[in-house]
Length: 372
Image (cartoon, rainbow, N blue to C red; front, side):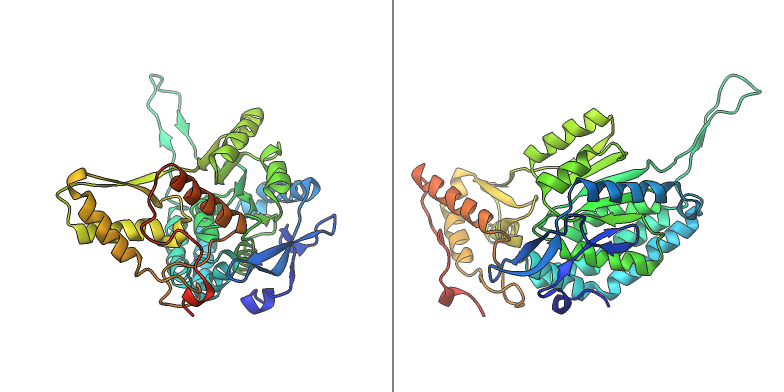
């Protein structure tokens, strides 16, 4: 049975290790909360170091297994392409799962899921087109060449704001080029990654090529970043966590790729078309309720356009519809975490203390103000 929102409701979700769903060794599970209602809706396994070790061992065994290691590049590409087809078939259900898990707009998640297969298809096409080089040397009896080979087991920690889209950018090339993977999704949005594991099995990947360990960052994530069996690490998240992961990678002498926190500004010049600028700023800061690494969370406006711009921005902001994420006419859904909501409220209060003037909003909407 494929995972759906209905099947997740009230369920317990196990770890995915060596091609099978298995219970955590400690038998413990953690509630996952629906941001729209604030209530738990399923439980995910709480992986500990021993579970992470089992997942890495499975990935290392799969990497060495001829069933994967000796598979031709073209056949690997064929598997990745098949995964793309399955993701497209399940795109709308995967979108529903992510909306229920992280509160982002269904129309946004649906667009992401329907576009995501293109990335798998792209890297599937690369699988048999990455070539080595022959390098001239000054000896006629010597051949000098290089050969591109997979690096090994890649560890990944993915965030809660766009779990599958951000996983795809690293998972697709890793699989196409013959690596194996252990993924630790965010403890705030694990369901869609576990649903993807089902599709990976259905696509025909050998057991152990992809493994999913759920749990907290402090325990499962830490164990994964420290594990000596990881050949490379990929992380998307906060700068503080990135520093800790980089330190662990340095201890194990492995490379890591990270996308960390930032503060992206809008810059509005005096000769701008005000309407166009306002539309850009509103979409840049309110998309995904601001919960994205590319959110335009600051805005610098040239003095001679400031008053006109602020007036237009406030008017446009007041038309932004806050409501249930499943509704097509909702512009902003709930924040994903209660802790994140508290942090935003703290920022608003801090701004007011420092002299900011609230021109629109500034507090939680009441129930009768929400759409739907």
